Length: 473
Image (tube, rainbow, N blue to C red; front, top):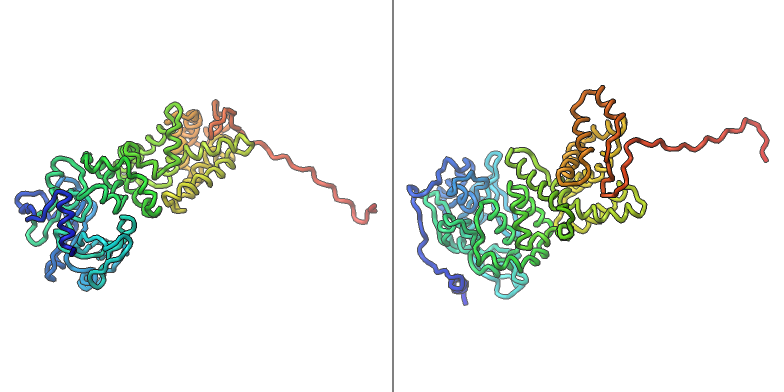
C-alpha cells in the first residue's frame, strides 16, 4: 500500500473524503491584512514572490475569524526548511520532532512550517525515510518525529482540531477549509480531525490542548473528541516533564486558569499533572485547600486581564501548598521548627512533582522562599519585622499570606497587621511593634500560638582567663 492509499483509507475511517476545499473569498470573511503583523506579511509575500505557496494558518486565522486579537502568526508553505532558509538571511532551523524555520524580522520571530503529509511509519518503532531530509518515527503509537512533507490538503488533515486547520492564502486573500473548521467555528465545537483515540495516542498533549481551547474560546468539546479524555489521561505520564511544563504555563497563564483547572479535574487529567495536589484536594476539609487553589487561579486570571505580570513561582506555590502542608505537619509534631519542617517537606514535594512536570530552579527557589517566609510573618518585633519588610520576596510572600487568609486559614489578624504595618509612617510602626497580634497561629496548622516577640538567645558564661604566670595543676 502506498502512502496516498493509506492516507485515503484513514480519511474514509474518519468519515472524510478527498474533495475540493471550501474557499471563502475576501469579500465573505473578516480577515484583513491590517490585523496581521507586518513581519508575518513580509514573510508571506517573500515566499509567494519566490514561487512558493504561502498561507497563514492555525490560531491566528481562527482568532481573526472570531473577531479576537491574534497572538501568533504561523505560516505554512510548500517550501522545505532549507529552501525557506535560502530566502531569508536571518533564518535558522530548529526542532527534531518537527523541523521548523524561524525567520527573524526586526524583533519578531515568524515560524514557518513546511506542509506535512499524514503518513504513518511502516512498523511501530520503525523510521520511514521518504525523501532526503524527511522521516517519520513512532513508538507505541506516539509520533516521535514527523518530518514527511506533503501537500496543502494533507497538511490540513494531519492538524489536530478542525478550527486550527483554516488557511489564509496571501495570493488571493481567501480562506481555505478542508476539514469543516468554519462550521465548527460557528457552532462552537472543539473537534479532533480523524479518530480521537488514535490522535490522542499519537500525541497525548492534544488532550490538554482540547481543554485549553475549550476554556479559552468558551467552546464545547465535541462528544466524539470528549469521550476518550476520561480514560486516556495516563498517556500524559509518558510525556517529557519539560514539555508538560510548557503546556502547564499555557493552561494556567493564558487568562482562563480557573475554568481550565475545573475542566482538567472534570476530565480526570489534572491528577496526571499534579498527583499530590489531586490527593490533597480529595481530602480537603471545610473547603480548604480547594478554596486556596481556586482563588490563586482566579487572581492569576485577574492579573492577566489587567495586563499585570504573573509568575509561575506564585502559581506553583499555591498548587503545592496543600501537599507541602500535609507533609510538614508530622515533622513539626515530631519537634522540628515550622521553618525546618517546611524546608524538609518542600524538598519531598518538589522532588515528586518534577517527575511529572519540570520546574526550573528560577521558579522553584522563589516558590520555596514564599513558603519558608510564612512563619516569619508571626514574628512581630522591631528588627525581624523591618528585615522581612525589606526582603526581595516580601511582596510575593505577603500576597500569599493574604491568599491564605482569604481562603479560610486563621491568619486574618496577621494579614491586617502586616497590611497596616506597610501603610503607616515610621513612628506609628514602632507603636505597632509593641502591640502583639491576637490570634496569630503557627503556619502549618498547629493550634499552638506562634511567638510574637523575639526571644533572646542565652549566652554561655565566659571563662575567666588565668593571669599570666599563674600556677597550673
